[in-house]
Image (cartoon, rainbow, N blue to C red):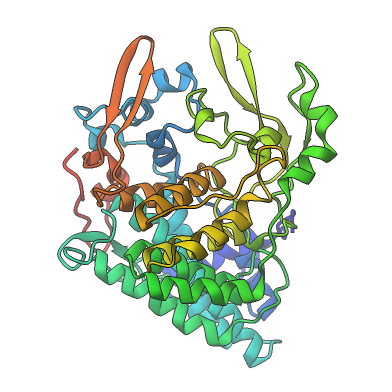
Amino acid sequence: MKKILSNTLKICGLLLLVSFSSCKKFLEIVPKGVKIPTTLADYDAMIRDEYGNQRTNITQAVLLLNDKFETSANLNYYPLYSANYFWNEQADRIALNNSDESTYYNSYTGISTSNLLIEHVPAATEGSDADKAQLVAQAKVLRALNFYVLANYYADTYEESNAASKLAVPLILSADINAPYTQVTIKEIYAFMLKDIEEAIPNLRASIPTVLHPNLGAAYAFKARIYLTMGQYANALSAANEALKYNDKLYDWTQYYATYKSAIEEPDKYNNSPSPMGFDFVENYYFRHGNTNSSGRESALRTDRAPRFESGDARFASRWKLRTVAADTYFTSITIGFYNYGGLTTTEVYLIKAECQARLNNVPEAMNTLNAVRVKRIFAQNYAPLSASNTVDAVKLIQRTKANELINSITTFADARRLNKDPNYATTLTKTENDKSYSLSPGSHLWTMPFPQGAAKNPGNGTIQQNVTQ
């Protein structure tokens, strides 16, 4: 799991070359040291390229939310970072976005790999038809996941009233570099994601060879996420309940804290314990890397972010500790390892279920679902079951927990965007930095990222229209 097969990138590179060319010579010549994939195992190695096509980099979204502490050096060096971090609505982010292209190209690299698998796996050798169908189904789930990131980064959030008229992102369905594509509407991209999931489900299984392979639980969990973003609460609740049939486990962070208490509480010690959120995390449906740095630590948090965690939150206390280095004070990460920021977990599904129950006017059950998560997070001496008298209050409580549980993920960004469209939940973000006040309104254009210049100026066999003016 932790080691990608050594020939995976060579396989990917050559197959891309084969698929991108209309000439037969690439099929006739096998370069030395390079293997053309033919067996099901060859193709399966491609899907497990965890740092290539299975990575969710959403740097600008994380900066805009202002949960993450960003260094002065980065803010001074990267003008785009500064524009989003300081909510500068006068900045021309289109002009500034000339180098931070990783979200766009990483996602489309993953989509290209999925397209390759969908096109070529049916003809693979040394595999049963059922196994081939499952690998194609897994590729469709991963393709939809990548489109979800792109749609919630470069396009407006889903609103039924205008989704058919607003543009989303390019829908690319072939690994051939010369294949034409269309920048579809928001409605069309969501319909396509659901189509991929519906087609995948009949061929997926409950058990998987690795956590990098989406299983049935992952497909239903992602289906629930899509429907929640669309505001289709009955469908989202149904999918969430299906996902929980395959995995309903929740990790006990209070027990984790008790296990590592002495190390966590030791003064001036900041490398305290292993991350439990890696490949074998009990909550995983599907694992994917997100925004973590190379040392295997989580991002540091701003000091003004900490008060939004509940008092007695063992999950927060286990993962971050206040630290001052020179002129900077922040909550530094104190765990080491891997973190499932970009994948799918039971916690997300429980909280999707809770919100849907509240939206469908079953507030008591919504709070029971929320408390099932909280009791595993809040120290016993701080814990009390939450209750709410109406849907609005219930959703606010659920979202408080969800924003903390899934911090620095595409899910919290997508949630903030959709909730900003509803006056019951819309929130103006505020902060003070160096004695200067800043704010970000719910309706700001900053909530949609501009396509990078490299993509807009070199669109290939299609066109890309910016979804923001700056």
